[in-house]
Length: 169
Image (cartoon, rainbow, N blue to C red; front, side):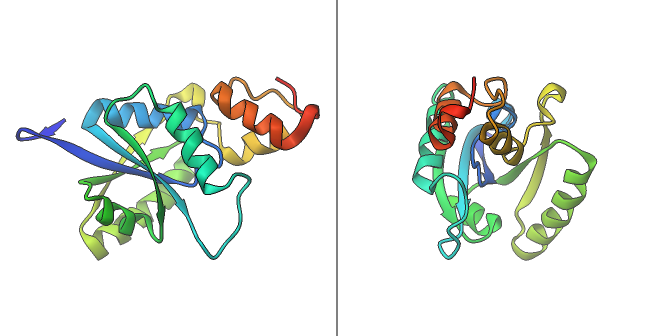
């Protein structure tokens, strides 16, 4: 999609702890539609939460998305709408899995637009990936379940390193 002769840029914000195949599907769709996608690894300097550090999440996402020209991965703090303004994008993209996602995202989208004028575009992930969440990926890996069908191989390897030899492929 273009605006005249200009490629539109979108921001896809999230914690990506870790990035999974559902995220990648939404990013690929956004890339196909808009051409330029900024993947914002969002974090709060005050909180030290998360399984992987921000640098590790940026590295994992960059590797997972290396096949997509026009996609960049950046670290951002604060609100997603602030990250959108700092990145100079035209829209925020959010992935939807369930109707519950829609309700939460719709409220945020209305607030973001009211405060800054930045609009949100929703992209549903493929149905066969709609059940994946980073939280479930971490939990499955922690208890040794198979995650190879949920994340790229390098992310599975990183999870296996964190949780030790009990985690299985």
